[in-house]
Length: 349
Image (cartoon, rainbow, N blue to C red):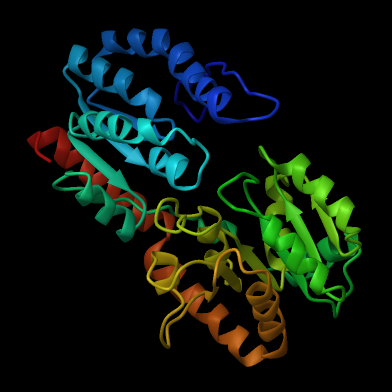
């Protein structure tokens, strides 16, 4: 792929992800990729990078790095272990202390541990990682441009009128989001249009709930191809970034980078003191925040943003400025490249 060898390894995908079979799902990739990882030991890479989730792959990355004399780097997109316990995905509380101890021991074996937000960097400090690196999600801003004609076409294709307020959720559909709140808010807003784009463990359950609620103003669509993705983002009046209580500093929704890049109006459900919450503060606020898992608060926030175009326009402008300043692909990857070179040349954290 673009001159780079890519090895693809199979994994088990459960029909209904729950505690035990979710663990099998994650472990299956670690096991199927292990022979491929062992093969890489023979060409002596400079750096081996493991991305969490799944943390199950971290031991193999560390082992192959030791065997081949490479440096090893762990990059954390989600604190999956913390999220599993704190969001109730795994309910065996007696496991928590030992699992977290194993996670901490594994992390400290790596030369570099990075993550995607300042609050997640702080959590790494809490896990006794002394010098964590901030490596934020990036967006190719040049590929995400607002095009009015494409936006109108997307709305037309999905039966959304020119003057209707379109609220879009685009991303993973799983336990961490708690999208039931969005469906019940849609029930309170029959004159608004809602689109949920994506797939995941709880999609079928959500669709059954939508049918039970008889939601005529909500549509489910599958993940969109690249050429339709920008059109979908541009078509939305309000982008929904929905998460449960306690999730905002465990997982930083990657969907937000593309929303900011296109200058979209993001409505996030997060606590005030979370990283997402802080993006909604002050004159430079680039998102609008309301309390998570609060149906009335979510519905009221949608009404407010639709009723106050001057507020919405200001947030959109701030979003574009934030994207240009913090998440441009060349800037983020340029800093990452320098860090990689430093690690190779000096062998220090």
